[in-house]
Length: 172
Ligand code: ZN
Image (cartoon, rainbow, N blue to C red; front, top):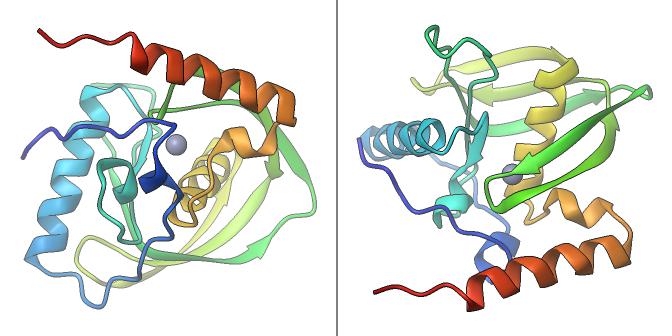
């Protein structure tokens, strides 16, 4: 397993639409292993492949709060089958939008169809934090970031801040 570099906003790669996976093979499993390792090392609860520069429809997640009991989830080609009209609000952050947080409304419940680590078709009824996390990660597959839901002003302030952080970064 290898820890990869997480791409941060602003970066065009994050705006790419990811492509469906034809078959879950060794290569995809290796990618999922690397993604999970990268996510854990960055203290995240979800990561989409595009965040490490791979435009494939693959997500890894672990929303378990207890770090000693890891419960990784692997979602390949996830599709939302059903969404709730009820909304829930969480303060969201993103490994690609470092140190920025904002409240986002999303459907409270959703049903997902996906392929697991072995390539088997699965169905999941998600609610609460899990539903929010899945929708956040699935947005990445469409090139959408949570800051896109904020007001133009708030979004541009965050992007400006991140650009500044990038330009003042030195590597010696
Ligand atoms: Zn994210």
